[in-house]
Length: 268
Image (cartoon, rainbow, N blue to C red; front, top):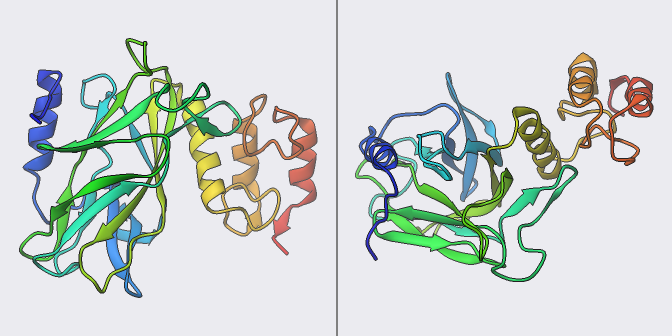
């Protein structure tokens, strides 16, 4: 199957991504390393690799082509993986979309009726479905590193010309063909498809908390203490649904503020 590039800007973005230095580290990319015999995802920061991380952010249209992005990319330092092996990915389930309170399947009417995510690299490609889907793998570089930007395109639902505006969640898993390495734990890429920044922030925070449940109620940033940082998150979500809606009434309000203030201090 021939690679399909829908616009000149998308083509340019793809060329720039694939031409990037094999050892480059790009902030906000998915960092890869091996820990205890397992592929592990981590944050890439301005100072290098940070803590283990399993929720990452991206946005369709960031390269100028609607419903397309090649970010975040993937970075592994030289020597991370055995030379002559390959690193690949697979969908662990269907993509989901934020409904204002939680993430739900994009196809409530049935399989293949909602949006799907197509991931490609040159002629290799795969598209999400209503369950787990095999992906593809790419060769580790000659220095044992792995730097790739995969093309991600959101496909519209059957009968629709374009996807719906929203925040989408892609559940993925990485694997190595090295027999000594186990696959990664599931990780999520949260992709903004034209939603407001406030909506995206609420969805991203909810994804973080679902992946890493707070130690105690009120701890919205999962740092084991309820303090001003959590208060700021709650006030930023005022009047909206989301993770700061502790009583589940569909909106962040005074009752939730009271709950947070009552839990103030270190988690038990």
